[in-house]
Length: 277
Image: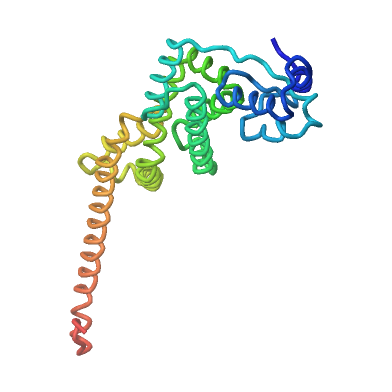
């Protein structure tokens, strides 16, 4: 059942009630803050902070609808509390309003991180894992943030509990990647592409081919989260092979220079020159 605020104020301001002006508004505002009633205005259900003018400006009373809030069962609140605890790894508040506000705050943090991670990979999204999952998480967050009613948000979290927990697990993998692993990932990409043209030469070095294939397999894996730990040792093995090859090439070049210089010794002697200067 619903009623316009103007009608409620008028009703309780008349006989037999005769409440002073302002008392009805204060009572309804209190019930609203306690989650007992809902306030509808301008085609939506605004948050408490946006409702101050609705209770003090009489010109808006005929545009404000008051509705009785739908109750949430204790079992639902308990399940959502557990879901939120698993998702955000914290201890959420117990009351429905505080719990809903807590969820919105954490979702806002997720949304900010997802946007930042997208910007990080924007230059070449195909080179990074989890880009599609980032989109999926972003869309789900946007969908949840549209639940302006606390009851709707709590009900949605309850009905989608398992799916949200699964999505949260994917979020944590992306969080670990973009926080701790992306630097190694970029280094692996750099080394992998730099050594590709000299693969045949470097494959003669012990362990190079195996390390190269390991890096290639991880970089091509759409979900490499459990394998990224192997990138560091593999990249180091590639770098060692490359450095060893450079050292061999340098030594060969020095040997050829020495041989050429030695070949000039007879001519230097004939000309009375010191071949060492």
